[in-house]
Image (tube, rainbow, N blue to C red):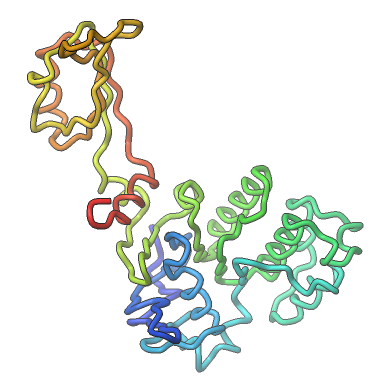
Length: 318
């Protein structure tokens, strides 16, 4: 159960660039305290623009945003001390050493916790020798890890992260997901933009989908995944007349028209031994329909977040 306290709230937030290019348009959303909120969209959908508006790197054309109940433009200096921010593309202060960079960023916050910083460095496998090197000598993955440490190190009330796992290997991605959940369980709030569907599915409590600068939907992940029909795969013990398979219980997507190893006879209509369909009715209707046939096996697949994402991004039947 989420606390009802709003950490982020936007009111018709709008950003237009020169030439009439829309960054975001009339964006209204709420992020509650203690949740990981996914902001999902393709490249160019408006994710980074939204984040830059939230951290006051861009000024809105219209509407406004509040963090901790404070206007992000008028009270930015008060707000930023309690935010951990990770930009999408980052090579922080490349002429600094890793140690100098973390110390410098720590001074910008009201809170410093050296013990927690050491914990983070150990988690991300960053050694003392690594911290002595200049950031310009770091690999992309190592630069990303040092940037993640600086975002977490002062235990902010809110983390705002743009494509946080870009450049991380799978092991480091898993460690990052664990840290996010640990941070959330200790009362922190996360706003995370991503185009990686699996990432959002794994860690987020709710997700918003943005398309061409406009908010499409906001749901709890489990609720969002009920909006797209499940898929069923059925195999039969013998070939079935395809006309008999029609039903309002499902929409047949594909038919396997020949049994394994059986050649298709030229000029002769063949019949399926298995099919894949999208459910359009309830399970009771489906089971009654299938009871007429010699079913060998049946499997039901829940929609993935990718299915949902593609559903919302469909345009003109494409």
